[in-house]
Image 1 (cartoon, rainbow, N blue to C red):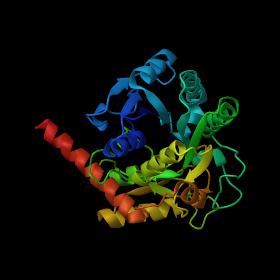
Image 2: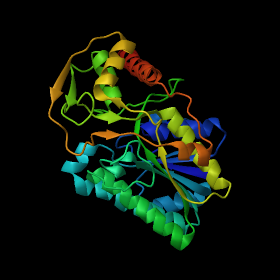
Image 3: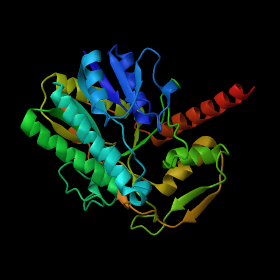
Image 4: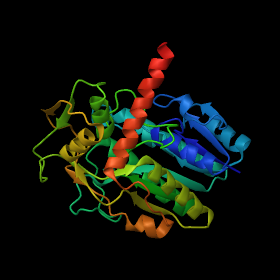
Length: 332
């Protein structure tokens, strides 16, 4: 039996594929390479280029590769982009997920792990936010993910489609062995952007809004290392294989840092005092969101290895330096 990882050539997906391959699992990747990279997939893992909405292709993969579990990462993920292109996000994130779920059920796959987001909570009334808090997304991105969560809930009731939905908070860091990391062009993730500014790859860093109702006026987020997040998926896989019922769980550390705090930490870790400017707020950004994540520890037996902002930034910095060095070598 094997595991199908959609979006497995992307940032988080590729870390998951390495995690599974390291554990000796049989894995196959489906990715359209719109934001992913073929080199991010281990050479021993088959990479099939295509879309999750292609039901004939997905059915063929399930049959040919003897798939019994799907880990679904493939999605569009930039909140401001979802505001300007909502229909594109509903197509890629919701419509394609519906097609994938239907194909899985028709081909007897009954274990599914879904990459969701803390954006489903919107601006939560209570911090930290628990899984049973009301969901009120402030962006089409959040709604596109919440719609898929609802489909999974209903599919489970109708078809015994057991799944674990993992709601990510802010993911950062890179594989400590330097095999993969955040490589998306024109990325908007704060830590990546700040590290690029520290390395001179950007002329400055913009802070989008300094008038939020937080101690220093900038948004507060809970940052989780991508490798800890990958292990949460492995723990979810083990849980489902053990007969566990469907769950929805937060993935974070339960501690928030403001934009200004992250910038200061990047400056300290990198030793570079790069330029920072204030810009208007971006549409769809909540003021503060921090995870209540005890349920994940209890239900999955998950524990964090990299719960340290300086370590997350150091791994991100090392990855950016490696990518820059690889480019220089390739040009010689």
